[in-house]
Length: 328
Length: 82
Image (cartoon, rainbow over all chains, first blue to last red):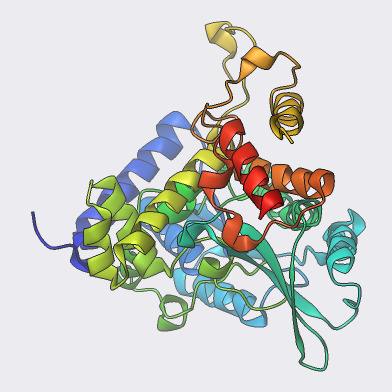
């Protein structure tokens, strides 16, 4: 057995791009019976790669992009999304969803929960949520990290009810975006592309009926490192390929590893690959330069997140067997 | 104090919606058995802190302390007699 290293994720990118494009073309035409694909592009690497693959599959005239910023989106995100749209030569629409989110209480509900944990929180403050514990072998807890307008930093452990309310409120963002994606898909008779990569798909890092909802998910089998490699192979602009992955959900800048994954994406890719290929914790620890006990805790955290988020993948549970004719 | 008289009814009522004591054995793994997930453990911890008047530290929040009704009760016993 060869030594564990990042080269295990190397792949024939041209062959894989061809395979995905061919499958995407066949699925859209013969299984979904739609005439094109809608992709919401955030400016991040995953949606950029999906849009490029959609263009490779169907051509730019059959791909429609949506740029859907809101109050907490980083300014550069929409600019990068527009750069992608121009680069690919696809039609697009930009819609600021902040007013709609405000109307349904997204920000109000979220801020009320934040204020319960941190009464001083108010206008001009920024915050994010961090996950803590699982990769050290403990039970995951959630921390609120906030920055006041004067630059001072504040940290609180979130009670479960407050954490759940903040997440529930912010999930409005992904769900509203999906509603708009399906509006345009219905209008154009197109299918909706979901953009999770393998880490997000495997670990349940998506919102049910939000970014988790789609007709087809072209990169759900690709590790994040492979998505970056694919994006570069497809010739996407360096400004997109070099962007640091963020959740782009909270007002304070936040890496995905801070909120959900135990590690940065390169290390996380390797940990997930190693677990899936039966490599033991000692070997993972050696590859990542960490103690075997920490590596074992990372394995446990991966498996725990799989268990905890299993329901996100599940279709609605039926209480009886439906007729074959109505299995939707 | 026998903490099982506090823990077990909470597990039964909150996670299994029953008062049938045979629904879960005291030594069954609540996590591996799919009865309690990580959010559920946080619910359990909040319940224990409120009910038993204790503060559970981050270092004590390890799966081993919360794996079964037996281990939770033993943990509470140690915690309250330390």
